[in-house]
Image (cartoon, rainbow, N blue to C red; front, side):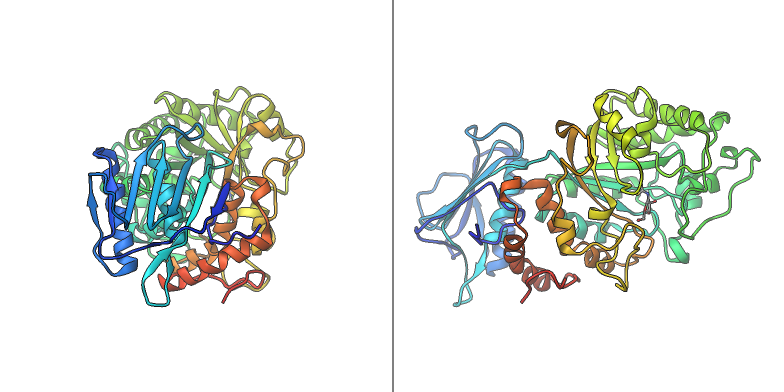
Length: 488
Ligand code: TNX
């Protein structure tokens, strides 16, 4: 299959041609329709082409018949959905087409991956026609900013990588036992009292309302939606540390900076609990556009089933009251009558999936995040200096060679809405730590989520990925040269 222009995830159709390549020259311009929505993307593209070539690339509105043109436009003759796109390179020009700006973002990313340095130091793209569309509508990364805080500049690095691999959902795990990382207008005490540290006493932090807007906009410009998570009714020690009223003895819990799980919990019979749920999910809904809010629901090890059901229902009701859909970890599958359209996130490969399959059969949508394949905080190999090992080790091939549709026996394939990688940060302290765990495995997960099964082949993937290793080096990202890749 190796039509190696090095695009990851593999597009649906790649047709090299013998026409003249596109070469960035002094006369290269980006041409867009006079459509306000397209302008920011045209600016980004011109900037990118300018940076890689060392020449200033301008933007024009008129249709130019000259070579050296990157033409960007919205069209209708593509498969349905917001994401399909087309890239046509030949006769010294580039045509980028999609139905929506999100589709055009994907086209620009593909173009970026096609750029190659010429022996004379210039930059060019070989003639090719690419037609592409994703397999799944939800291609996510879940990032834990609670165990170790990830500040806005570092978060932008992660978002940039997601965009480069056409991932479209950033799921932020904003709260946990150790800390609360988002400032909510009705509950300012949460970050004031419970955001100061990270695991092991490392520095903490939180996102202000202005930070949050900046994150949303940065993601949006890269065709990425943000799904924030406030984890309840377990993983709540940070909230218990802020508010004594959330515990039966009325006393604030001690700060917790270890890495145990499952010990903290809300209490259904305390009135403060219900006011808390209404406020925090209400604020989160007000601050975040988009369809989904994540309520957590995982690893509540010290609560009777009936109380768990009541609390998950209360959190879900707080979300649906704002017209949003609920996302929750797989444990919520045990709750009868989840709201219509709820997304249940499969993660724990160690337990019996029967309740989970039953929820899917009853209409839940399933997001597939098997810890043993896509928890990218798992070590690459035994003895790796970063990460954990409770779900095993995950090398590049293991992150690549699996099938979302058939992973869980009995799961109806049409219930699967997508694939989400996870990055938990108990052991990850710096942006270099984050990118070392993400690269190259994030590219593997992205291909699982985007590319048609018939287009997937590990050997071909590592061939295409070779070029990406050079790119990560060039832009100074830390990454792991996995023995099962083919690096220079
Ligand atoms: C399980 S995955 C957790 C997290 C941990 C992670 C570490 C899930 C829903 N819960 O609380 O951080 O393992 O890999």
